Image 1 (tube, rainbow, N blue to C red):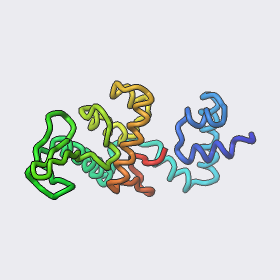
Image 2 (image 1 turned 180 degrees about the vertical axis):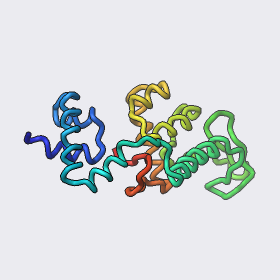
Image 3 (image 1 turned 30 degrees about the vertical axis):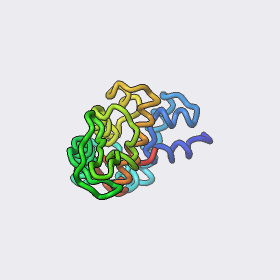
Length: 192
């Protein structure tokens, strides 16, 4: 019983069942049993909170809200545009006579000052491998998929999937696409 209030806080915060069970050292059967009890108490004692919580967690329409869909498309478009860029401006001299190196990564060389540069320099994606997987992976991140789901989706290992998720969340945040706290629709999460 001494864990019930902590459990309720984690449940209301939207923590996953494995995360709550691990943190409180309870099994999944206890998690679902306690979850049902919290829902019943919430419905009886705090109907406004219950209505708010159920609209956030018991969704039938899993399509993102229009503003979230626009943010998702903006991130995907940025990645696709950056990866497919054929021309760039030199960050050193401002010259535009540049040429792209062969390969999937957007690396260029300035013909005027002979500087090599990458469009990914200074971004969270700098140094990341397998750019052919990025768009599909970031779609999974923005859909709220778990790290094991992202691992299955990409074919990467667990460690790489964890690192990639962190890097893409940084990119999403740097582009100003933060979760809207009051949205009643599906949103992607910036925080763990």
